[in-house]
Image (cartoon, rainbow, N blue to C red; front, side, top):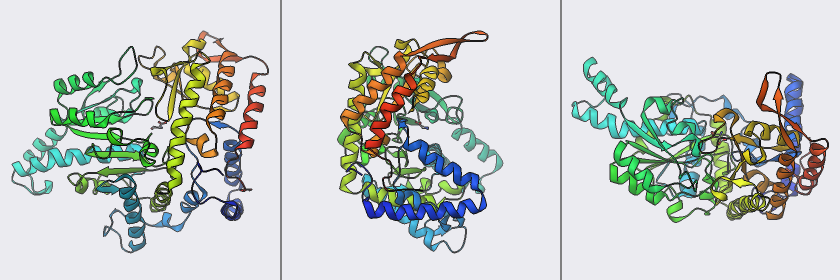
Length: 487
Ligand code: DSN
């Protein structure tokens, strides 16, 4: 493995984890062989395709192995030192270590390692903001310490107040996430919501427009962060906007947490010193297990700490243990090399598209993702995604700003560099990936379905998939996934 892969991986490490996986699969096979088969097949599929989904990565064997233990069997509602179940001393060790690594890695005053996903982390954050900024002062006004002390009438008054708050977040089609106030999502229902977008000409975030919207709407929560915006955000400016209108700044750094951890995003681009609450997933550019994390200032820490059972079901202690391992890996110097390579490789991929006349949202990237407008190839996102998959290139279709094809068929393909960078791909390989993508899309034609024009049907010119798969195999063979791991 190269310096961009997880730390501590050498020949012995690979061989040892190989033995562990072989033994585990024999045990699984003895109970349900189809699951053992699917597990082997998943590794084979991941090894033999170009994984370019911007939200995926390859966790280290240490992280993966940590999840397969008896910590899975333990209930531990509550938080460290304050559980509703007995015998949580080892879970306390795990949760405290995960939080400690997170605080040290991100320089945060407080970290909460329990969220099962990014959506859960965002819900914990929203409820913590409501509890801190609305419920607690509301209780004080009513002369009560606890909601159970309120009369029915006062409780209804307080509930109505909590349900009458405002949230301003980035719209889905300009790169925000469903949970940033998109109406069909719970975040768009629990708050009065308004969405900010990007400049219709440049595609860049327009801070003046965000400030105007905030002044007019006066949100309780201003959400920054993105899932499909290919540029960096100035979080110092977002905090200024929040402060001016008395809002709480929440940053969802799920996509770029690895770039923050790896010190590619520093100063105004590091959300942690600027936001009141920061949420993230742990499995994207951060390269940990599937899960979430919340970082907060001292003001919001007590409310976030009540995330379980307020919002979350019982903690997944085996996953918190894996988060601790992944965060320990991210604190190693090699992770900074990895994070810088993620950004450099995304740049190379974007340059590779631009020089082959690919139309990119914002014209390029300065983070880990690239958003290609495939209407220039005469395709919908759905057609492009399928043709690429036929050719061994795994991506996801994604809306572009003001998408004419809507959020399901879309007009874009989102590409990310974190996974293939973990495999060891560098700038030259990412340029070659751009060439292969363009080759597939140039050889794809929209096709009609039985009932006329279709946004899903397509034809791929004969031989294209085979040619591109063979070219991709050369890149993949030169940069093997989990080398030395045989099943
Ligand atoms: N599913 C994640 C992504 O792909 O960006 C966000 O929820």
